[in-house]
Length: 317
Image 1: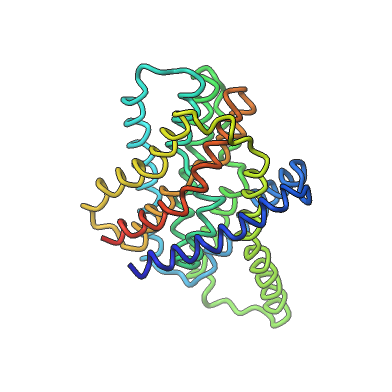
Image 2 (image 1 turned 135 degrees about the horizontal axis):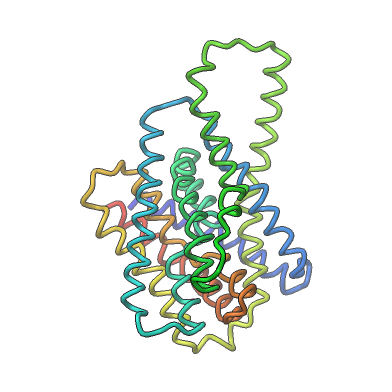
């Protein structure tokens, strides 16, 4: 219950920031072009820096095991949802079905998940979350691309491994694994001061993640014509699958395994995040119901204020 209260408090802070973003969008202080550039800055600079900094801790085999567990759980969780949707949508392959399926499978685990997990569990939670985010990037640029573009679409494997977030994961992990080897190395005082300044600057950059990510989400919502799609049942099917069915299914499966509590809670919280903003970008690229995709993103983001605390409460049982 205490963790759920912390989650509600963190969600409240995040939605105040979202409200600020909506206001900035409505009064045209931040237009679509600026918001797009800010979103790119968060995804390509701030998020990777925060991920890299989450690895700046003393080497611990338990941490490494937890990261590996989160990575394996990530692949299993995506497999569960893809299999479930393959059954539920076996008779549908229209564009709206593609948007619904993508929203159901892929959560906003990096853009919204990182500030949420950072608020709930601190840097250790973000450390475990990177395993799940790595799987997300691999799946979204393989299965996600094929879902929107068809099986004949060329897989963007290069984009998987050149993604700033993936580079941050592997470089941060390399530094983490090298710490036992460099434990006895003594560096000159000037070098240590320089490294300390760099790490302090990186901390400042990483701390921008929550406010910028939520303000960008708010601006996106302010520019979405929700009214024209609000009666579309597909929006609510996607929301139900993303916010309720996905975290509930994972909880039912993984609660029987001896998973470290923080790793389990991190994965459940990440899986309960709203629909990934990547879905709207793919919908625009492949011209498959982009406005509906934006509405699904907006509706799931708003409803997650209620469902994420419930999912975290469930994960604690």
